[in-house]
Image (tube, rainbow, N blue to C red; front, side, top):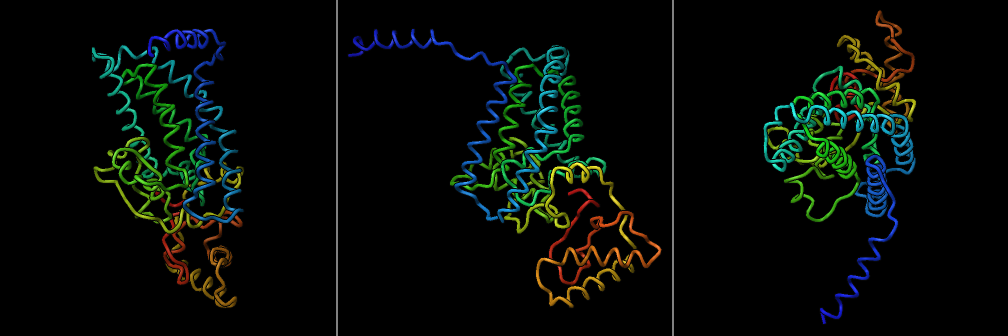
Length: 349
């Protein structure tokens, strides 16, 4: 039977080799892979969404995130891939890993070290205010979904590219590993931002970053979101920064939904010093009075706080720096009718 099938299989194989396959370059293949993965994850998210969000919130999130991708990531990602490839081509034989004779061992070591570098860099973006100023744009999404992976400020993308380039030169990473790492990291970042849950997720999370681990990272609570910094592998976090919890709220508690222009401006807002404690107490009392007048109807506490802050600061020596600005300090910490803790633009989270 096998002898009879062999000529047929040979004929089919010959016909396949004669087909005119599209001639894709590396950039086109990467774009095709990202686009395909995005639509697959989007379809899964639409069918098996883990969290329910208002349609308006989801729509605003997707428009802002895709706009960010078009404005920043399309240009910067292509630039970063090409520049990183050139760095790897020039310095792959001179870095710290250049002495490794076994190419497979070098590739594995390079990939792991690149992922560790991204973990350290991500953690630094949470710890230092100058870096958090841009990274907070990513955390401002109130509806974490596959498109949140592209919610990045252009300055952060540029700085990340510089850090990667320096690391590639220092370690002597090969071009193939650079390209593979860029593709795999992009796919994993989309995956662990997807709003889904699946059987075996906790088991897989022992090795790689999965959605349930990364949801904690987008919590409004700092005690939760200063954890789980991994990009591909989750075991880096198991040395002190791992958290397994279900966040009550996502995003930044004092930042409402934003469009693309809001994101660009938000990434350039400098941290501000909070008002004196006495002034904070006055603002809290004024906000409580406003809430009491409307019968503590839900949904207005943030607006009450903004109006009370502007009113009290206008009557004291501490004038508000920007009209209608978002509070830059921990307003929920002293707000008697608000729950949770917010970090807003004041501190890294």
